[in-house]
Length: 68
Image 1 (cartoon, one colour):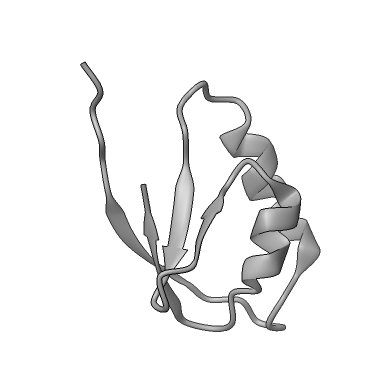
Image 2 (cartoon, rainbow, N blue to C red):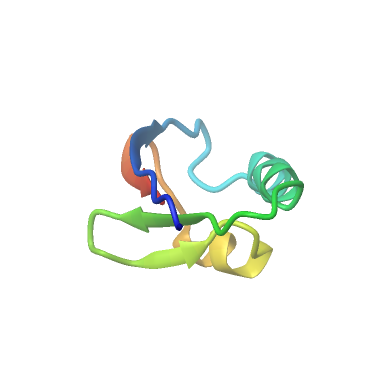
């Protein structure tokens, strides 16, 4: 049986796009066998385990995201 959890989060990044926090998030996500996605308010969905996907999302200060 597959369990799906969703959680709303707010990302507060001081300098718009910072590579280090994103890289740390990707590293942490890759420690789990689950599938983890983030979806922005405009319904753009990326795999949190993908550094390129996360960098393409380019979250700005106080972006509302949904983690799946």
